[in-house]
Image (cartoon, rainbow, N blue to C red; front, side, top):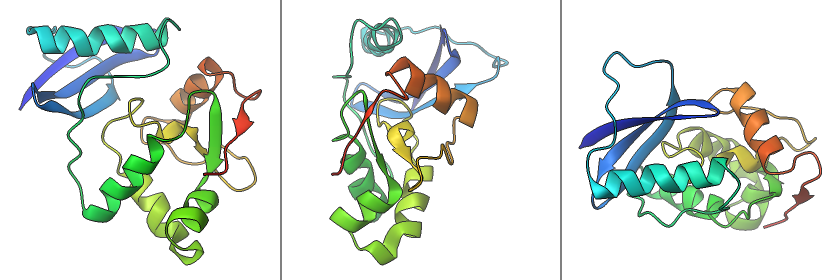
Length: 158
């Protein structure tokens, strides 16, 4: 597994993965060993991330390698269906795709998402529209949602 970094207008990003796919993408404070992208694949991942931040792209095409339980992967795949500029709620995801009683399990799976931004867990809100939970920090969740047009976003009922 290789690790590399890039600076963005939201801070330093750390990527983990191989040519097979990205396994993690997260915000980090300045790392001790900042490693610039070395391979063509790593440069592609960084360029797509920069395009997202520069608002010249709304999606990612680099491969993802989702490492988690079958339930987590199922939920993460559902997150990929939430379009840029829209939001949904934990309750809606649970109600439509699992079971309304599984809302906590859905929220827990979303909280374990290791591939931030590319798997857009930042687009999931509390039932009352509150900006609850984000492993990348609530400040970054707010920035990402604003970047995508929040609070003007449309609600998506998956």
